[in-house]
Length: 159
Image (cartoon, rainbow, N blue to C red; front, side, top):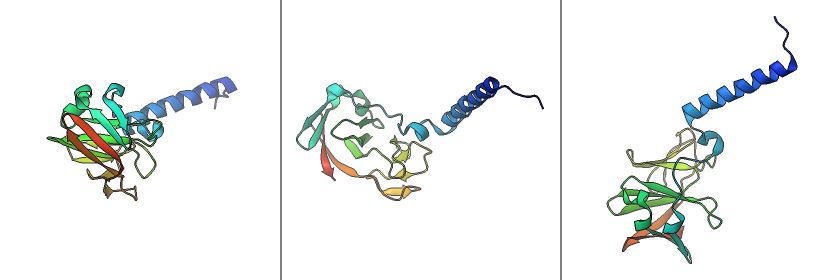
């Protein structure tokens, strides 16, 4: 066996880490490591806060104009975040953003009408946040959302 110098060993080890990380991100999604999903943040110009409500002007948030669209809201007032999904004609569902298993952000799966952990997709939740399948043991927190005159109103107290 050929002797390896320290510098060669470190270079080989670094290359292995890069390749392994790339493979894991490609297979399982980087959210497994970063805890951040692919859902876009709500446009700041579309969002206002009024007392215990968040208001989204749907004319300023094109992602939510399409059934199947979803945005996340994270800021200093709600650092844990919420997920807003346009689930049907004039129907919106809002749930806590973090999976109750490891805190990884959830994604909206419109095709299957559910929220899924963006880590490995193992934990699945119903549209009202109910736990469908673990490893999570608790449901997502639901929030009440109503729409009037093109404004989506989200009450920040449990729905």
